[in-house]
Length: 382
Image 1: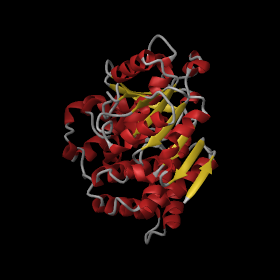
Image 2: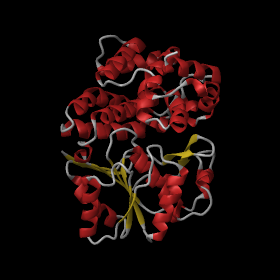
Image 3: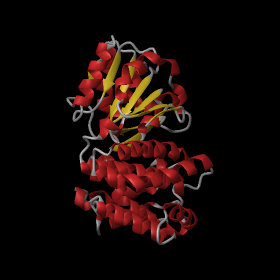
């Protein structure tokens, strides 16, 4: 199965298409790409093979991999230094959400002086950037979760503020995305599960958003169905290339759909991830049923439609909740935040942090800090 798509950007889909990476670079006029990935992936056959293919095609390719699981401003600064010292002219973003988010931020700052935080997604800050100074980006996701490969934003930890900050510019949308299921087959079961639940959280929150965006709403609905049909298959058999392909697609759909907005899952997951350095997909998976319950009175209509689309035995919020709980159990996702090392020391702060997160703006209900603290404590297991 192979296809070429141009929505939301140019997407090359199919088994074995990583070998076309050099062609993608040349199509964008890149002669000396910097491949940005994370420390856990840099020595893998996927990355070494990609580098060899680029070198054999005559490209002068460098590597930067000092990227944490929740990439920080320091990581970005170091990547920009590597980009400039290597005299690169484009970026290959390869990895899960951390590697690709870091790569996009490096691309943004490669031609800019000053602070990354000047381009925080507030108002029209993005207009401060010189679009011509942002080099082209090719993205290859190795997980099916964040969907950042089809996004115009990147999420970076601001260490001084102990918070995740959304950085936005239209040119952060990679020009070419390669969705090759073969690069995801070595992903461990628990990460396949957690990243897949992240993809679900994006589509689910986008579907519940009150904003008017029928295209995003339709994409979210189908993205959820793909997760229902293929996530467990991908976890149970990592070599199932159809399931791996469909989960990559579901991930890109989730990130495309959240043009409609996200919600309280992400409003809580962002600060918790920054403070505790916890895995983003796992956080969303744990928070998911608690947020659905808190949003119940505002999502009865969408949940009726979703439960019918998924063919659930019970319709409405209860049917979707039951499915989510069953899916989490089947995937052995932890049931509480405490189970992944989060404690109550941030209880006093978490409400204010969640309210100020941009994702809170499109939650179906405008929660107060106290309501966010209540959801947090329930998810903590208290």
